Amino acid sequence: MKVIYKYPISLRRVKTEILLPVGFKYLDIQVQDGKLVLWALVDRDAGSSQLVTLYTHGTGIPVEDESTVKTYLKTVRDGRFVWHIFGDLK
Image (cartoon, rainbow, N blue to C red; front, top):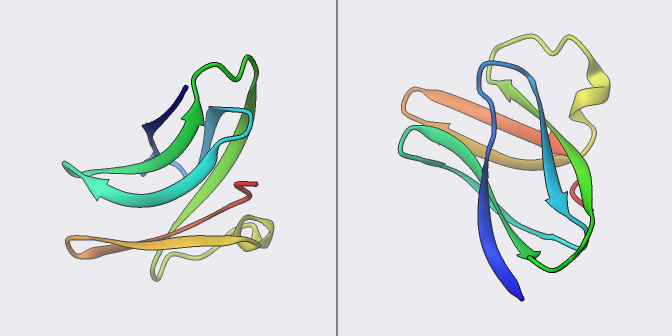
């Protein structure tokens, strides 16, 4: 059975790892209740999971490792902050 779930993305670190069911479909990333979250359509009966890595960079903050900005996903405004999220969600 397919269902939409949300997964938190850390703003305290650049790198966030999320365990998602195999075959998930990335839907969106937004701020909800002051927290950055990813929504995905997942199959609850998938049987196996895959580890997905996301990288969050703030505007004006130096990017220490350029390999973390290869696949752009979304820019999100959070009050006076603007976050740019990268990662391979295939």
